[in-house]
Image (cartoon, rainbow, N blue to C red; front, top):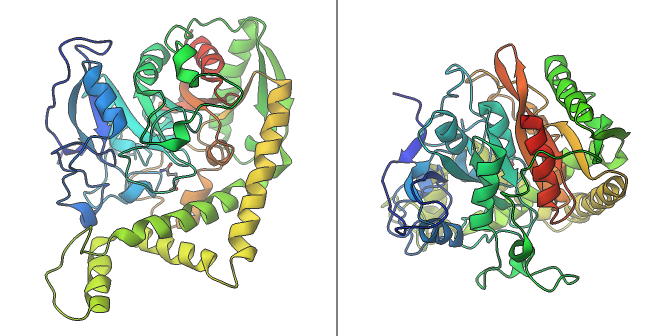
Amino acid sequence: MGANIFITEETIDGADDGPLAGKTVAVKDNLSTDGLRTTCGSAMLDEYVPPYDATVVEHLKDAGATIVGKTNMDEFGMGGTTETSAFGPTKNPVDEERVPGGSSGGSAAAVAAGKADLALGTDTGGSVRNPAAFCGVVGIKPTYGLVSRYGLIAYANSLEQVGPIGSTVEETAALLDVIAGADEHDATTRFDQTMDAHPAENSDYAAAADGDVDGMTVGVITDLLDGADDRVVETFEAAVSDLESQGAAVVEVSLDSLEHAVQAYYVIAMSEASSNLARYDGVRYGLSTGKEGNWNDVYADTREEGFGAEVKRRILLGTYALSAGYHDKYYKKAQDARAWIKQDFDEALAEADVLATPTMPVLPPKLGESLSDPLQLYLMDANTVPVNLANLPAISVPAGEADGLPVGLQLIGPKFGEETMIRAASAVEN
Ligand code: GLN
């Protein structure tokens, strides 16, 4: 059956010239493409054809890129292995018995397998960085508000950003240059009040990949090393000492709030998801089962058939967390934890220019190995979700291999500090 990287393979040509002329780009299947099926990896949207392009897709076309297809993903972005897709799992090109990570597993695999020069993914809690790490490529999760979400089919709006994936830091940063910017269709791309323009206007992300870490301070988040696989930690530490030998100062930082990050993330993500996914009623959106009866029965049939098990689990838990009587116990607590995590990051980033962690605490699991235990899957996100809760930028860059499998190093920057983070990541490649 092949590696199952694409859900729909179709070529869309962009403008004749531009910064991405001659480049092929694979696009995650939750980004709307005018006239081209966009499924979100779900049976619910099996036949959905958007009537417009997402803003990031428009930017790709204007930049001269050739879109080569829509990539496989965990259903609605809910997962970390691409195994919750209604279209079957994607295989990791590095080792076909293993998962490519997720939820943007098809996008990272497309780049790793040479099926596309570049790719777009989306990152709600790690979905660009996780598959980049597992497939041995580079992935960036931008600061919230740097890139338009218009035309991204929502999973959890307050957390997600579209992010670029590529083989090198410089190429990935060049794709960020193309997609970043203010968009009148997305009010969250409003520029920071302290700046007089959108941060992308005065930035050159590709040029920042100059490998110069001399004098930079890198803060290692010690809390996120404790639970990680020893082989991952060893590879991570070797990459950090390499940065030190290039002139970076390495310090240790500890953020007490991080022990609550996974819990807070899943309460918030599931709550937002339960609200976003209410629109799939088989009338306005989503699978029509053709059954007849009263509205309730038809609605229930659509959702029973259209959604997979993980999506149903999250709608149920999210609805529960938001329900009257439980709202303060879960949703409000999670928001408090989120505020605490933001504050902890601000303090740590006052001491260091960038923060470093292993992107994933584990090596890529074998296909089928982790799917049966959702809690195990959620814990895999321990190092990536804090960044989304704090709305900060982060990059995953290949740090080396352990047992022949790729290990990713994550660098977290300050708000709109993409250039610093990209500079440090390019030194990891040296
Ligand atoms: N694995 C996380 C989740 O399932 C992150 C997914 C994502 O970033 N879309 O929610």
